[in-house]
Amino acid sequence: MPYVRTVKTASGATAVQIVYSSRRGSRDIEHIGSAHDDAELELLTAAARQRLAAGQGELDLGLDASAAGGPLPITASRMGCLLDSLTRAYDVLGLGAAAGGDEVFRDLVLARIIEPASKLDSLRVLDEAGVAAASYRTVLRRLPAYAKEAFRQQLSAACAAHARLGPASLVLYDVSTLYFETDAGDGFREPGFSKERRLEPQITIGLLTAQDGFPLMVSAFEGNKAETKTMLPVVRAFMAAHQLPDVTVVADAGMISEANQKAIEAAGLSFILGMKIPDVPYQVEQWRREHPGEEIPDGHVFTQPWPAGPSSNRRDQVIYYTYKADRARRTLHGIDQQVAKAAKAVAGLAPVKRNRVHPARRRRQERQPRARGQGQDPGRAEGLRHQPRRVPRRDPVTPEFVTGSYRRLFEIERSFRMSKHDLQARPIYHHLRDSIEAHLTIVFAALAVSRWIEHQTGWSIRKFVKTARRYRTIQIQAGTHTISAADPLPADLRAALDQIHGRSAAH
Image (cartoon, rainbow, N blue to C red; front, side):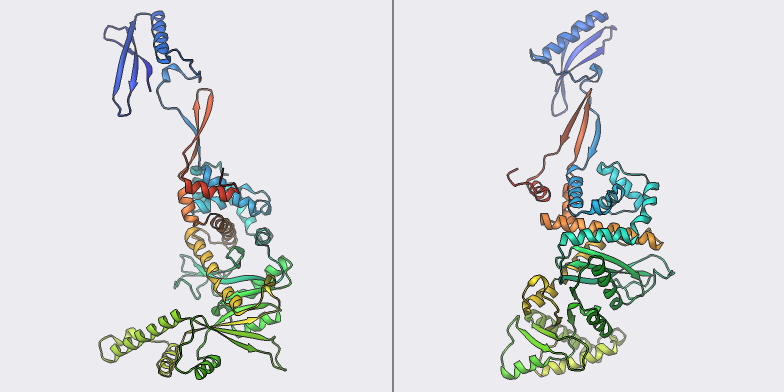
């Protein structure tokens, strides 16, 4: 782009030049003339500008003539695509209204999604994103409010309303653990059974989700509290807070104890529970006797009604056993590996101390070769215990419904993975229980926003953030005028934004 400049010559006169800059950086200079006083200089400068305009009108931007050709200042820069999308999800879920319009909470939730960091470093993340964040002292003053049960219940109610829960809705429950880099417990952070095989003090996190993995409620428990004792308090509190007469709880075998089942029945809840099968069920043995020499069809379901006896306090139950050929193949392969490992130890080819086995596992291993010799395939059946009270959303209670509901537990596991890895839920910088609870409240809201974004776009939250944060909206000051500019968006990101903002693909 050509521009006019003035330079001093060796004789002391002022020369007026037109500079033509090329894309490669080289410049062509056209000398207009030299002036010895201000009047001549003004005439030569006017003549140069007329030559540049070539008879066209010139837009007056109010720029200083001496600054012509220099870079214009950027007065504002913002991750417009990313911030607008996350704010849209936050508002659609009703979290803004549930938080009472608290902008500090919203900003902390958005910062947790963009780049998980400490509360202090979150202010840097927000500044880079183009958000005028509150001061760190303000953040510290607000955190205790986020740990209050009433505040968390409002967020949970917003998520439950979005999930459209009703009587006998299907909910998933599971637990995980978050460890702390300390060597002393304090009654809340205590050593216990760690999901990550850690020895440090930890806390236990119970997560309740809808059947698609959308978070409904998160609760923190002492690190040494048994998993089986966390489920019922969470479910009861959720039902009481949202006036739900009944829900159908789906949980894994590790969450259930005999006392837990009795407590669930006493609470009048329906459940779908996974269960471990130490021996071949009677239904499977009967099928083999009736079909000698035949393989069980892949996906075949055995149904075992389990009515309550006259003196029993429980309700009628139904157990479903599902046969999977791929699971049978993996189980038998594991048996072969264990037998080969034992043979090496007996032959002295492997150190015995590396093959110590827990007594319970040894008993299972002793049964496996015997079962295989009898033509039975241990581990080929998946046991699900179903105790219906109502039909969730009027869906028919079929074996396919029960087994399909149980397999939805991968959704809650996915939510846990997102919380731990994408949102980095481990409260590294928190020590007091209130600050830990407040941190988990922020992570819970960030998880809800992330799951909504993923559902709308079909992208992972990590891919969406990584892609959208590169495209910024900037404001340039040109004299007295403010000009907005933005990078052009690729087609796939534009389509994802249309899904988020509810725009038609034609736009």
